[in-house]
Length: 71
Image (cartoon, rainbow, N blue to C red; front, side, top):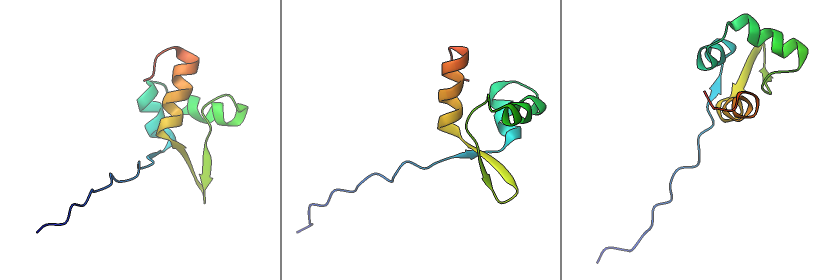
């Protein structure tokens, strides 16, 4: 007899984006993304070593809050 096992779905995977990917996603110049970083006005970002990264879900949430529609 086969055992009745339920397979749990994989945990939600976090997708990290580079500033260039954020710019493409939002349809803006990458320089604007860097300006937002300096001013503290854009989506929350993190530094991983020398690299700046954004959580994709947070970029969408930020865009929704600021532009009214997610990119």
